[in-house]
Image (cartoon, rainbow, N blue to C red; front, top):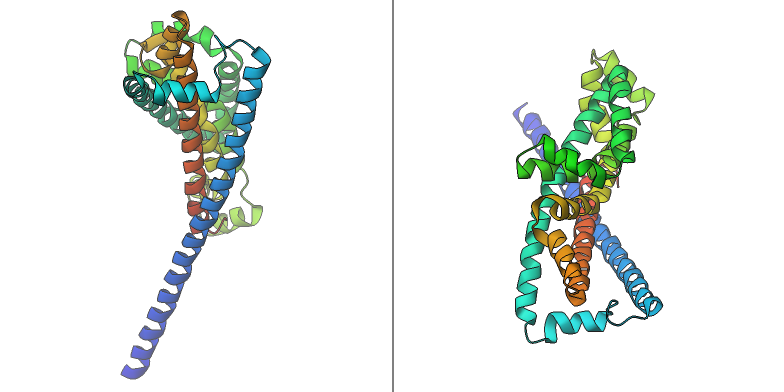
Length: 287
């Protein structure tokens, strides 16, 4: 009897080891596949940006205003004060990324909470969706003075301005993802005595992971856009403020350099979200 028990234990341990190996191998393959897709996406987007940039400069045909890649490279790396310029831009980028992180977290948390309430309650959907549509329809530049009047704390202002940009697309995607639960899975939860909340937590949120990560990828550049707007109209710091000041002083090289750096930062963060998405979805068997 002891030998049978020992054999059963060893069998379960062996099955567990094989399962862990398969899980680790799946995550590794997902990471490799995600990196491959990321590199392909990065190459394609870089080529498109380069073509659009060079084409725009050629169409404008004004060397004082339009700066090409070679001129921006010289400004950042070959001019006398290139090191100081890079330090200034990177410092501004750090502020902008911090503001974008605040808006991203605020917008995603608000969108996730609102989506959960909408799925649980039809009256909440009736109340929340019109407000979200209004926030989406009204230009944010028109709402910014009102936001400044309503909130005195600078961090809260940045969170609201940048979070509004994130909120609507994330909300729509997450709601659709939460409602994508199949009827069979819902019936299983109900048979075992689970209510709407159990269905939401145990089934709907795992099923909505693809939609959630799609929202993350969309929201990362959106949060940076909102942060730039907040820096222009509210804080007077970061890349947003630097660009406005450089335009006012006709420092066009600095304008193009700032735009290039913030665009590359948005691209890198978007691609990082894509890699994380591949790994997490593979872990849940959704790759």
